[in-house]
Amino acid sequence: MLATLLRALLIGIFRFWQIVFRPILGSNCRFHPSCSDYAVEAVREYGAVRGGWLALRRILRCNPWHPGGYDPVPSHDGCGHDDQDHDHRLPPGSARPSTWDPVG
Image 1 (cartoon, rainbow, N blue to C red):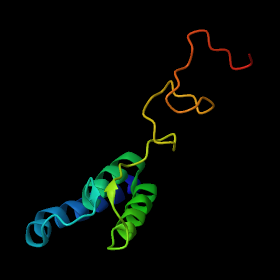
Image 2 (cartoon, rainbow, N blue to C red):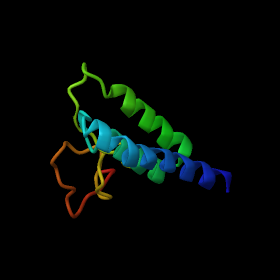
Image 3 (spheres, rainbow, N blue to C red):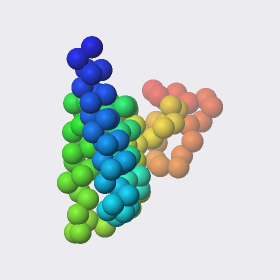
Image 4 (cartoon, helix red, strand yellow):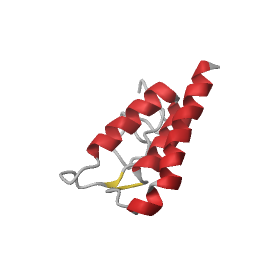
């Protein structure tokens, strides 16, 4: 229950920022999705502690010395792939053969 409350509180803080300050300051984030959108998604996906940590790291990277660009919330396996059939031992872009044998 405390985790759910903390998660809702953090999301509320980020939504407040989006509603109150985004129209005043404009959309100046160096990243896509914006830092506040990233933070909401990270907290929803990972909870208040880990999602908050990911959001804080992202906000600290949003500065004039970082090039920015596309930076989605990482997937749960930590490698950035949404594909369940992805095998980390194969080179990128390789498909797993239909008769794949991990020992072979």
